[in-house]
Amino acid sequence: MGRPLQAPDLDTRELILKRAISLFARAGFAGVSMRDIAAAAGITPAALYHHFANKQALHLEAMRHAYEQRADARLAALAPEGSPEERLERFVARIVEDLHTNSDLRLLMQREYLDGDEQRLRLLVEQVFRKQFDALMALAESLGPQYDPHLLVISIFGLVMYHFETTAIRRLLPGYRAEHDNPTVIAQHVVHLILHGVARTQ
Amino acid sequence: MGRPLQAPDLDTRELILKRAISLFARAGFAGVSMRDIAAAAGITPAALYHHFANKQALHLEAMRHAYEQRADARLAALAPEGSPEERLERFVARIVEDLHTNSDLRLLMQREYLDGDEQRLRLLVEQVFRKQFDALMALAESLGPQYDPHLLVISIFGLVMYHFETTAIRRLLPGYRAEHDNPTVIAQHVVHLILHGVARTQ
DNA sequence: GTCTATAGCCTGATAGAC
DNA sequence: GTCTATCAGGCTATAGAC
Image (cartoon, rainbow over all chains, first blue to last red; front, side):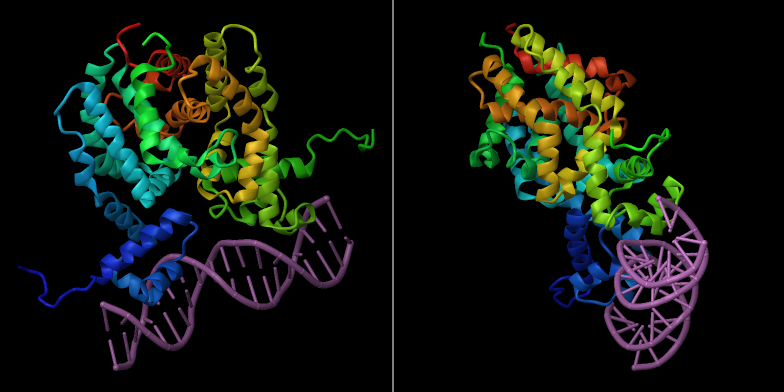
């Protein structure tokens, strides 16, 4: 349509963003230089400024680009089919799998929790959280009407996210076994805890 | 005994560490310069090198110093008095209060999850987690013997930590109310969820 | 759209006087 | 134990050729 006809084996701008995403995920905004990004994309630093106004703008676009990946997959897990328990199970399995597969996204989210300004946090809300959060709030009200839905949804995300956030340190903590990194094991544990707690009267 | 007699209104080394802790908590290792730290401590950058070999060593000592604060208070919450449920409640209330009061420690922990090398993660384990984790593993086995104790303890920490990690972004998410930042509300929510889950058969 | 070259500033770190 | 002065290199960003 308006796009150039030659096979764009990879748009330069997109390649820059792709490489920038993994650098920012690993080292954060202050830990990555424009030289690093240019080198990773196979161009000179000056060329970056043809595509992006400055480092901040490049970073913001990289976040936007990172959030787009797999957005469809995340939303597919929220289909209203089945009982509330089945829907919870499906949703948790999907985000556990997503966080396990796409660790850059998870790292970028963690860094935004720490360093995101209001603009970037709003972007994260709109592009990643909002739709999932709304659907989960409704699910929370049918699963556990005695709970505050906002707190319950945060707790569900927290149970999943924290396992991944602590991947490196868990290996140094008592009782660690390799299976604790298995997405299926994590998902089953989290779902069971949300549904039943530790109560022995099941 | 071996200490100098004059009233040390605040040891320079300790003042440096104190100011470095809050700078590193707010901006991370790469986001803080030796000049920033020197200025915050009211000395010149060169003087920092009399007290610490280099930036890395200063950072490591700052972590060590940050972890010492309130270690006693954290352990006091683990006294074996009362039923397992009462002990859980006491422990959660204490770490919620601790994280709410001492936000620098929480920020530093989040940053170490992301950027800590093995040495610094081991330090965090030994100085902050180990004793709490051991005691909580025992508590987990009496509370919910059907659960993997390591996963259950991570889940307990995660439920608490994630609420604080997301303080900035939660305000932009659906259903947020100011009381969600109240330590008592958070603690009660977390304890109830761990004990009962969302099951309506209580 | 990418390059070379470079301006102007900030960085970690050191030398040596006091 | 802190200072002034400084080095060598890294940083973001720009100018201008191709």
